[in-house]
Length: 340
Image 1 (cartoon, rainbow, N blue to C red):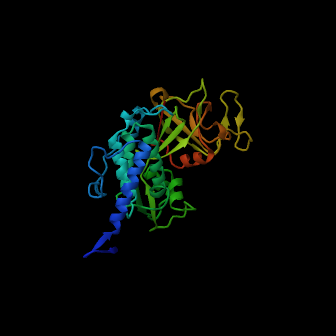
Image 2 (cartoon, helix red, strand yellow):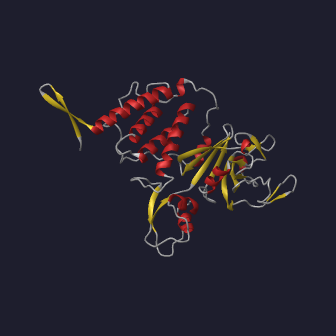
Image 3 (spheres, rainbow, N blue to C red):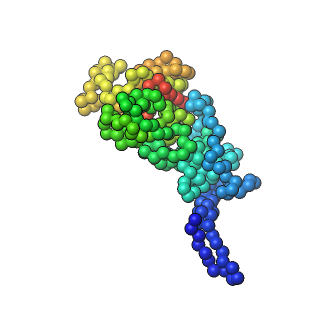
């Protein structure tokens, strides 16, 4: 291990490079927490150091299922949370995660799991926004590419066998084959070679929609991935709350659509075709959504309606986001929680 040696009266002082990185990382974390969270996360607690952090081999406590997330009420948007809602435990988890991200080498999976644990117990608006941003940034490193990390239960490797098809591999892991083709740079899903090692994702992906903030939060199992802006149902045709799932055979690229109000039939080539790039049909499972049909997630030709209540009840996305969500959600297994 490399060391720098500095002259000192009567002796020489050796400083370990990794030690310097850890000290600098801690100083950065303290500054971030103080500025964004508005408090000292270490107040009244033992200082977080490399020695006091849980080791990277320790497993994080399993989070609750995606269904239980529906019972968690988000704070009202644009409202400053009282100081009593700022949880020091959340700040500690975030501080630990930031040190892990800045360690040499970076402990990406351990940092992700600590941030996700923090998100599940956090109630402060600013803290939640910061944590989601960090998790979204990390997803580009551990999820949306071919990289694999030790101790990651969400992404693993798979050696292709003779006769394997990417669609079947995706079905076994409860993810669409499109996302496997994307992260592995596979241009022809029909041309897998026996012995080839690919990265697989252990699904399913799930969705949590907030009607008050017009956001869609994407999760892999119970781990937050990223947030997307959405459009929702207009007054009188509100998007129903409750638990939904992606309907079997409900995923289509630009299907022919009949307007239920006017009975006009729209084809993909029509200049005013309303469904955008993708259509994902939903079926209601629990709550006000139970047994309801005719609702879906789709793209739009009217991007100005994203962030507003102007649809007939469906969930609208920018066309690029609609393609991404289409490539993540799988019929039957993927759940969609819609709440106020």
